[in-house]
Image 1: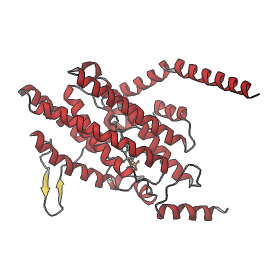
Image 2: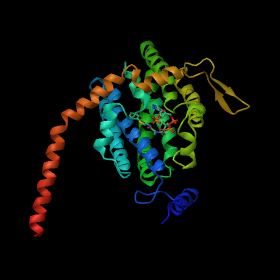
Image 3: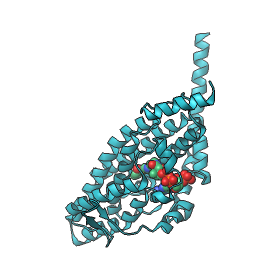
Image 4: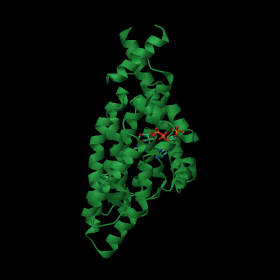
Length: 315
Ligand code: BYC
């Protein structure tokens, strides 16, 4: 079939809200954009295990430890669904992981900040998972089928994560003077980086126009960021804490909260690898990959033996 006809069929599917599936014809740039976004999303989930994993041994009670352990495992699972979804676009998991380790592939800027106190675990659940859900609910309707389906399950788990984070902060906000201060300090440190998770302003977003046309993205970076601010500005009232932004104010005309300027220089520095923990995060991932080599080798050898046995049996 001539390429023009294939393009027409592809566009018709996008227009009619029919999901694009792995074996369908798709423009090369559509494949590449999805591969870039899904693999970077997978890397974010896996690198995102590190800041919270840091607190598993120091959680303040057995119950908190169990919850955190389950949450961190969930994030690992999200990474695995997403690597599988990305593999359907024709790149192996090993290649994707090599790109992460070499610095070629990005992962979310947010995971390059340190977790200094227990309250950070609450702030991550509430703000970081909260921002992630805002973005991922949109992605349950993304045009690439395998990505959209992975998002449905991920969103269910993320809402539990967000609630557990909020509940950690709620307990601290009703605790001693020190606990209240710890809660406020964590909110102060995680607020601006969580707004950066949505990506650059629309006017600076290089991929948005095309991704919106292909319905990979359904809402712009600024629109999602605004929705998130509106939600959190209300939720924080229950905590009796403050968001660290003097300009945060309800705008009756816009029916949204106004907010202060994001430090975009900091954002790009972190994206380029110069954040507080970038080196530590990538070193930890490389080390885990090297230490896991024997497991991968053993699994591959076992699979080979099993296949040979089955072939013998069949003969
Ligand atoms: N950090 O044109 P733009 C989780 C890059 S994990 C780093 O707007 P796009 C969790 C962007 O890649 C959930 N880089 O891009 C896990 C692009 O560079 P390239 C994480 C960023 O793709 C554990 C350039 O800037 N969620 O929930 O149209 C524990 C220009 O940007 C960032 C996802 O990964 C950033 N924040 O839109 C707890 C969601 N922002 O690639 C929680 C999936 C932008 O052209 N991803 N860049 O070299 C997306 O929805 C989109 O990729 C984004 C950016 C909205 C993030």
